Length: 463
Image 1 (cartoon, helix red, strand yellow):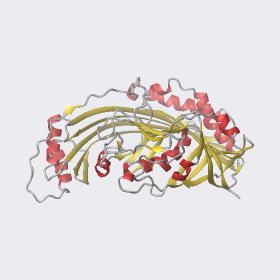
Image 2 (cartoon, one colour):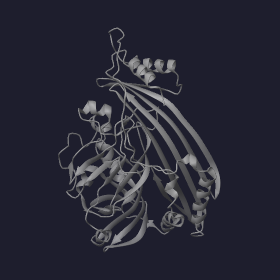
Image 3 (cartoon, rainbow, N blue to C red):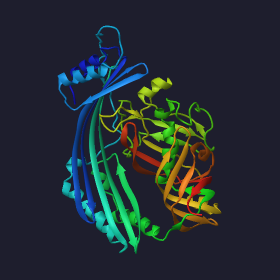
Image 4 (cartoon, rainbow, N blue to C red):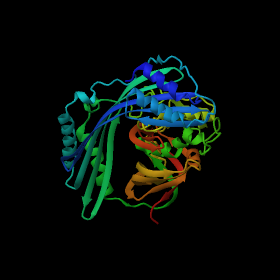
C-alpha cells in the first residue's frame, strides 16, 4: 500500500524530536450502502476512505496526525507535525528505525465472494425480496425498511519496533426495521445479520424466516401492556441480550477505562466479581464473526481473552498505549473506526459462555418475574457500574410460564451487583452483531450470551 523505504523514512521523521515509538497506519476502504424503504430503493451510497495516520509515543504521552494526501513530502510533513508536539530540548535526533519485517499472518476468515464480484443489481434484488416477504406476513405491517452494507478494508500497520503487517477485512450486513400498526398504535422491531464475510453470507439465507423473525416481534408488541415496576427476577434471553454485559461490564474491562482508574473493576484481577457460574470471553479470532479480524488496528494478532472464569476476573482488554499505563502486555484489542482516529482498547466478539441449564428449566423455575427477550439501548457509568437499559421485547413470567407481552420495561442496576446475582446460565449460547461507539469511533462488534437469570433487578415500568 506504501513503499517500505518511504514508511521507514516517515517513522524516522516522527521520532526526530525524541519520541520512543512511532506507528504508521494506512487504510484503503471501499463501501456500499443501499436502503430499501416501502419496497423501493431510496438510497445508494458508495464511499472510499483512503488515508494515513501517524502516532508517536514518548513515555505516557501520545500524539497523532493524519492525512489523505499520500505523497512523500506531505507524509514527512505530517510526521514532523505530529513530532512537534513532543517536548524535547535537545537538537534534532537522527533515528535509525529497526528494519521493517513482514509479519506472517494466518487468514482465519476466508471470503468466498468479495463484494466487488457481485452485481449491484443482485444486492438490490436481495433487499426487495426481504421487503416483499415481510409485507406478505400480515396486513398490519405498515412499513419495512431494509438496509444492506458491505465494506472491503485494506490496512497496513508499520512501527518503529520493526513491525510490517497488512490485512484485508471484508464485512457485510443486512439490517431490517419493521413497523406494525393497528389503529393509532404502532410498534417497531429490528433484526440483523452480519459477518466478516462476503456476499456468501446470504447464500444460505432463509428470506422468509428472516422476515418472520422481524415482523413477528413488531406484531406481538401491538398487544403488549404496560410493564409493572419493582424488584424482581429477570430472565435475559440469548443473543442480543448480551448487550447488557457488553455495555455494563465489557466497557469497564477495557484499558480505555481501567488505565485511567475510571473503572469499577480497577485492581480486581484475580478477585471474585461474579457468580461462580459466570465465565466470559472476548474473542477476536472466531472465524468470520462480525467483530473478528486477523489483526487489530495496531498490528497485533487478535486473541481469545478469558475475561472472567468461574466468577474470577482473569484479564482486561489492553491496547498498546494502555499497556504502557498499566505495565501489561497489549492483547490485540486496539481498534479504530478509520485512519482519522487514534486506536484504543475495544471489544470484538464479547459474550458470556454457556452454562448447564436449558431455556425451559430457567423459565419453569421462575415463579414470577420478567422475561427480557430482546434488549435495545441503554447507558452505563464505567466508573461506578451503574446502568439503565430498555427492554425491546419483554414478557411477564407467572408460575414458570411466559405470559403477557409488556412494554416500557427498563432494567436499572449496577454491573458489579448484577454479575453476583446471576443464578442460572443456559446452554443456548447465541451471538448477535451490532455497532459500538467510543472514543476511537464506531466499530463492528458481536455481543452474546446464553439465556441467563438474575435473581433480582430493579425493573422500571408502570405502577
